[in-house]
Image 1 (tube, rainbow over the protein chains, first blue to last red):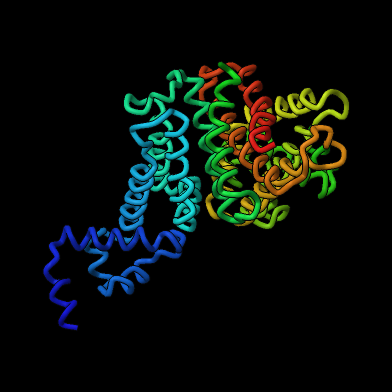
Image 2 (image 1 turned 180 degrees about the vertical axis):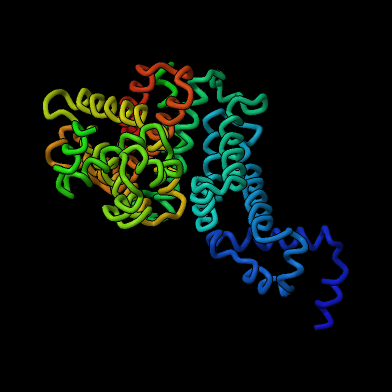
Amino acid sequence: MTATTPARTRLSPDERREQLLELGVRMLADHSLEELSIDLLAEAAGISRGLLYHYFGGKQGFYEAVVQRAADDLYAQTAPPSEGEPLERLQASMEAYVDYVAANRAGYASLVRAAAGGNDALRAIYDTTFDALGTRFFEEDTQSLLIADTPANRALIRGWQAMTEELTLTWCDDPSVLSRDDLLRVIAGSLPAVLAILA
Amino acid sequence: MTATTPARTRLSPDERREQLLELGVRMLADHSLEELSIDLLAEAAGISRGLLYHYFGGKQGFYEAVVQRAADDLYAQTAPPSEGEPLERLQASMEAYVDYVAANRAGYASLVRAAAGGNDALRAIYDTTFDALGTRFFEEDTQSLLIADTPANRALIRGWQAMTEELTLTWCDDPSVLSRDDLLRVIAGSLPAVLAILA
């Protein structure tokens, strides 16, 4: 006991908050947002509910902080590599996306639900992340995909993102419907195919 | 007054319920589910709240009945014509889908939100309709589209449906991003393009 207790007490408030956030994000991998109660986290972290409320200002604040962190992680982990052919870079980014969703199935699905379901703060986090993932195709460092930045192409990217999300969640629910390789072929191959229709 | 009152009272309870349902569906075109209160409908129908509760067993029952009717309408209106080339039939069906969503924007968007947002009954109506629209591709009378009924193709159809929904809602929000013709070209053209990736 003495080996762990002093280590805990040496954490600054910021470090402790960070530690709790990371724990929340890890728990979101296997739990839906609804299941991720303050009680559950307090128990897992070995601290009191009161202290958790202190750090996050309540249940809603805790959800928002955890979901924002998970969204930031998703955005960071799906960054396309800076080297390589455009299609290879897209494939690497989409592989990271599929792996992220597969590893965080429960939390990701509940974020999609929460975003759609009228919780304005969580919806804003989801929408901002969805937009940021799509906008990335038109940014300086990744524009080697050579997609013209037009309103029509931005709409097509949104549609393709929705297809990618639905396909990935369907595959996570039942991986027997198609192989991971085929899933990735469809995701990466459908983007140029869809863009070509209006090109 | 005497010209309309007798007409009203001649309606049977079933006819009256039907009339109220139709009014609810019409109001869903311009109002979200949240806005479609019993008060609003009672006022539009010129009857008491109590009578509405009598017909639908409460607010939730009224929502469910209206949404189920709207979903049935969507399914019926998007039935592919029985004659014509496969791609022409798909285009006709998708044209009806786009027109339905455009004409019922507020209600359709709020159904998507409600379905995702944890109202189990509304979600079941949405899921059943989404599945039925997708399953139609594999049914006897419409299978001239010649899509093999495999788990992978069913997953691809789900993904394509999600893209179609997102594209259509994006276009309804801002029709200037692409023309209706281009929207229909993308929707109808992307299905064979996506299926071809694994074929």
